[in-house]
Image (cartoon, rainbow, N blue to C red; front, side):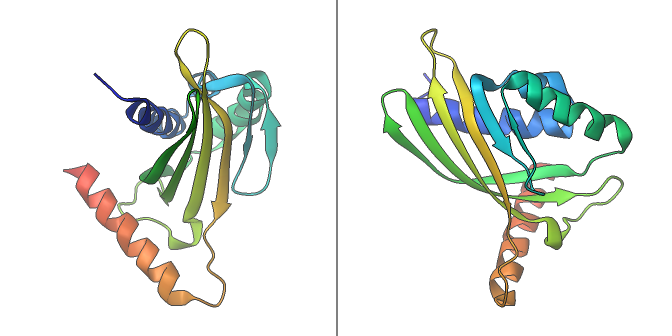
Length: 153
């Protein structure tokens, strides 16, 4: 039987999968009614409808890069709340390596509703620029390339 941590872990990868399939309704459906997100560029949307409205033109106007993510931690912060910390890279269409300049640190706050379903309360996607620390940026890129190689097999 899956633990709560496993279910939150799966929620995160379902979020990335919906992005990778360019499926705005599926991605928005993973959010709680008041859930929100902060995108890589700082754009925000609150509520599943606004999230879907934000994503739909992104997915329809150009082929988006694919996420490859790695969960660093899932921490239960209450019986019905969890915090997930992850890192992610993006692989451009037709390529087989990540774009180091698009690496991100990602955070998900999730809640369990009365029916037992876990949903995203907040998804925060922050550029992993590591200003002035090129060795950290390089290590993250190497870690994400290894993750990409592992999921490709």
